[in-house]
Image (cartoon, rainbow, N blue to C red; front, side):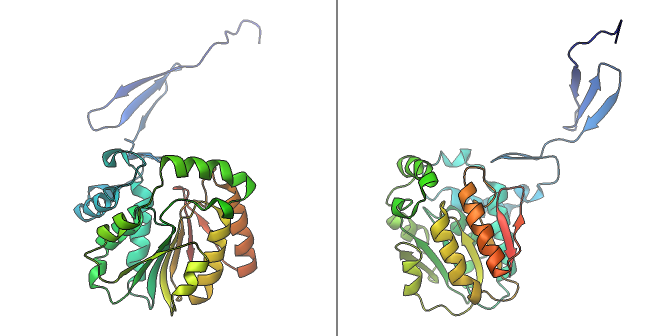
Length: 263
């Protein structure tokens, strides 16, 4: 170590005309990095995000982003990858037997985008939307879920029922069901289910929904779990993992933070 100088390492970056970056380190080594295609919602990638330039997706995403939510101004909502995953899954489900279900709707950001993307009004299916439409029911929250649930209720959630009815007025095959899960699920005499999206922010109703719908899912039906990999929702992941072990479900953890199951 004698005679060696120890100091901070440094890189010099040069932006290139095509969006890539040339990076040189202090030892004279160079490398070129690809342009970042997406950097939001906890996900940064240099891989293709080509769907962002699709007019079909942009129109669907805009329909969802402009449902009247209070998360942020619509133009600042960047959950495109999560919505794209749901649109992809729903497209796969169109050819399967059964209806679509979303548990956890709020203003319908995801479900409205899915309905637009899939041209759901022409589908011979029903899309059931279950929510309290008044935020997270605190009496269902575990002790370690209460603080975040209270915060979201104060910042984001409000009585959105009439907004959702208005958003889906052009979709006669969308049914909006108000109430707590799992009790509200018993009001619908389900047959087969082809698509399930779960986004209720706490463990108890999510596990209850999975238990209710698991026997009803058609072979190949996708289930998307919105909060599964979020580090703000570790109780949900733990509870859902326990359910998956009991049920034999295999959950794919996606870099978006979602979980994906194919029945």
